[in-house]
Image 1 (cartoon, rainbow, N blue to C red):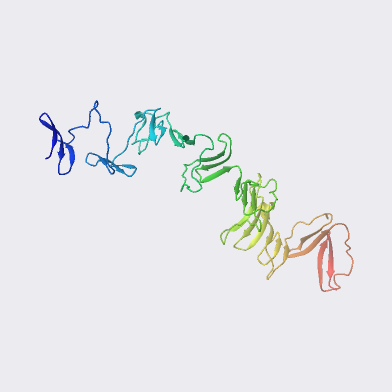
Image 2: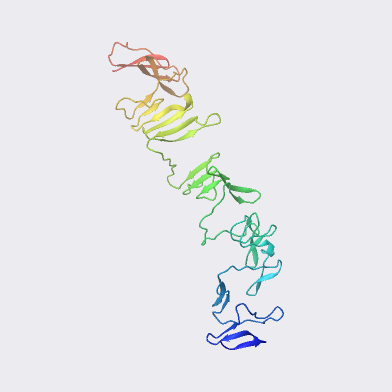
Length: 370
C-alpha cells in the first residue's frame, strides 16, 4: 500500500507509492488542521485543482485565473466591512447585508434564480471607485441626475421591452417637458413637440428633410413639412378608395373636405352646404364643374355650372356668372354685373336664326350672330 503516518494502532495518512499521492486511510477520515491548529498557507503548482466529492465541485488554476465548475458560489458578507479586495483597492459589499436577506434560488416574486435583497436594502453598481447606479425594490436609477447612459455610441442594446402603460420621461423628473406614454389600446401619446430631422421643431410635429431658409412656420400651424427643394405630403389608398383632407369644428367633424376618388379619377371640393355636398369638381379630362361633376358627351376642358339661386345685387368690381332654369329641360347662361350698363334694345329675335338668349342683371337679352 505504501508508507504512512501511524498514530496508535490507526494509520492516519498514507502515501500511495504508485500514484505519488498522500491520502487519508479512509474516505472523509482525516482533516488538514483543526479549529485550534491551522496551517499557515497552502501552495499549489500552476494548473492545481481543489476537488470536492470526486468532482462535484472543483476549483482549477490556469494562467492568472481560477475557474469553478460543478456548483454555485455563495459568499456572505458582513454589512459595513471592506470585503471585496481587487488589487490594492477595497470595495464595500453593502448590497448583501446579511444571510437572511440573500437567496440565490428565489426572488421577491417567489420563483427563479437570482439575488434577493430584503426590504430596506439596495444593490449598488460601482465604477472608478464611485457609485454610479443604485437598485431599489422599486427602480434602477443613476446615483445622481444625468450621470450615466444606457449603452454607448459603439455598444447599443438590441431591444427594449416595456409593460403596458409605460412612460418615457424627458427633462426634469418632477416637471418633464416631453413624455411618451403607452396605453393598452395600442397608442403612444406624446406631450411636447416632435422633430423629425430637427432638434428645434417649429410646430408640434416638424419633419425636416432640408432647410427652406430662414422662414419659420406660420403661427397656429400644428404640422410642418420642410425641404430645401420640392416638398410634398404623400397620401396613398386603394384603387377604389379616396384620399383627402377633411375640415371640421366643434359643430361637425366634417364641415368641408378636399377629396380625390381613385375609382373615378375625380377631384372634389365639398362644403358645408347640404351636408358636405359637392361644390367644385375636376375630372380626368380637365373638365371643371361648379356644383356638378356631370359633363356632356366627349367633353374635355369644359367649364360647367349647376343652376342655382340668382343673385339680386352686383358687388363692386365683379361680374357674376350663373345658370338659370327658364323651363323644364331649358337653361340659359346669366350674368349679374356692377352698375346698370345693360341696354335691352336692338334687333328683334326673329331677325336672325342664330341667336343666344341670356339674362344680364335680371333682363333677358338676345345675342345675334352677325
